[in-house]
Image 1 (tube, rainbow, N blue to C red):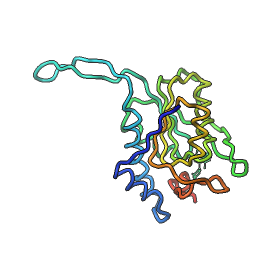
Image 2 (cartoon, protein in one colour; image 1 turned 180 degrees about the vertical axis):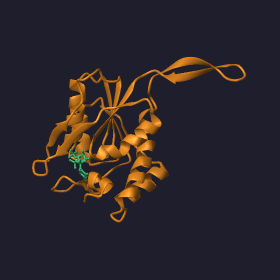
Image 3 (cartoon, rainbow, N blue to C red; image 1 turned 120 degrees about the vertical axis):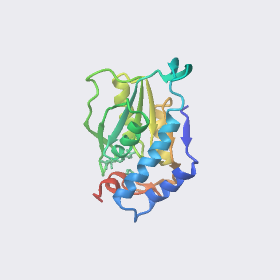
Image 4 (cartoon, rainbow, N blue to C red; image 1 turned 90 degrees about the vertical axis):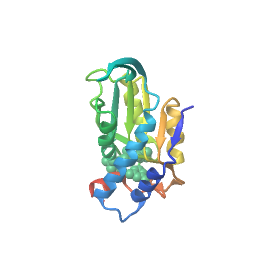
Length: 208
Ligand code: PRP
Ligand code: URA
């Protein structure tokens, strides 16, 4: 069964309160999301493969470690876009494979509208970025898409999840490690996370 990491870091929890606050304007929301994503990405990359290297310091040689794996970021549009800059700050060499899914408002089913997958081989580790894991439909569809195109190892970095979304992702893809700032209480009848933070895409881009 997949591992779930839920942050207890005081700065993550501080920024989460900023994200939840309905009065937070989009510019501040984006900054808070960036900081939360950075902290969660640190946690999510703590087990990446490394190899020993010898580097010459100005004084002598030193043994060290270097990353030994290609990593890809797969932000789910639109809301996952707000986590990309953090991903590239932490992993400057990462490839970014945008995935376009929107959730049909009536059926709550994910609808794919963009995927660049299939153009060339994917990195060994793919990190799906999406702040919201609500019903889990979008996350499962994104991981299905990555797996269909040969992704070997997939991690999910979100911000908020509902128990229903976690259960659905774990059932469909038990091997996917999940990293979150918090697990909320429930979903409402429209598939929104409670207490949640509202629509993460609209709150970032001022389209509420
Ligand atoms: C939101 C969010 C997730 C999805 C989560 O996207 O960013 O992708 O809903 O819901 P689920 O777990 O029930 O699938 P949305 O469809 O609102 O698109 P947007 O990011 O473009 O606003
Ligand atoms: N998507 C969001 O942006 N927010 C939710 O609460 C659920 C899905």
